[in-house]
Image 1: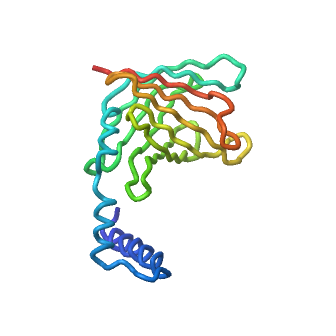
Image 2: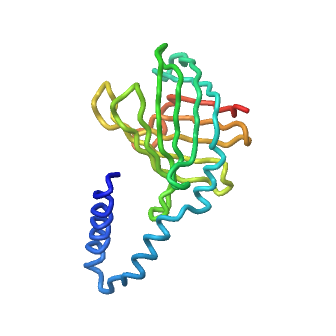
Length: 197
């Protein structure tokens, strides 16, 4: 970020924070607001849960273009590494899709203020940006993310649900489902990740 934009952005965020509390009878003190900002800016145990995904992974991808058709099979490599002092997990993917070279990148993290995991994904198959939000199971082995992006065929926003299951320290699986009216209607993709040693 440009050195002059950072203070402006922070002041804008503080202004939003102040204005959002102006209708309340007891406005937080400056110390209380700064404490809330400090808490929201400090990675915690929820971030540490994402350590399981750090590293380089070989991928086996199955993609269903239609619910009744056979899956398209491809392979690739995903590399995940912490960025910004452990605030966000950066993802870099290289592989193939539809017989063509494919690249993707994402950011995954935990929004302390909102109390949920969130993420963003972009790739060379689309100019849309997928935005995800979700939770982790109490045993820490499963993440369920609800995502939205733009369907290139209809131009409309569509929803999906991604279930990421940690099977072992060296293997996890992500299964994506098309969602309509809040319910899973078909499996669209499955990726098996195996750690590169």
